[in-house]
Length: 112
Image (cartoon, rainbow, N blue to C red; front, side):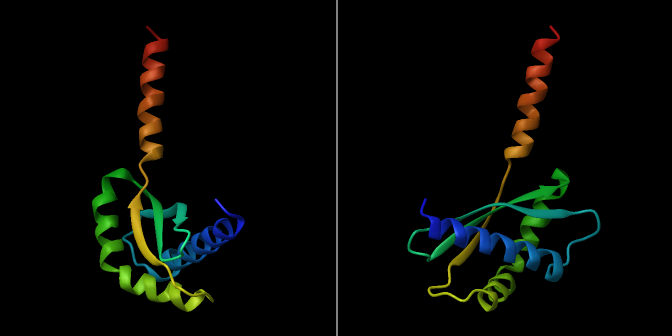
């Protein structure tokens, strides 16, 4: 990955985190954080990986992000000083929950 794309990913991650915190109205106790941003080299698309806590609220949070996508995209476009403006896609990052499962399995194996 080029240094330019890496810097753009960090910038987008920072802006999206700020937008989610300030402008997205989630119900109490639901937390959405950006874990990773992956922008294509041509800057047309960016995939934003989000972690959602608690896990039982994943469907609710995904629906809210989908419903608010155009508003989030618009807020991001206002903050970015670049062309082209990448089209945003949210992806739920399940890495942490998978790691928890693997850790539990390893713990179970070691106690046998």
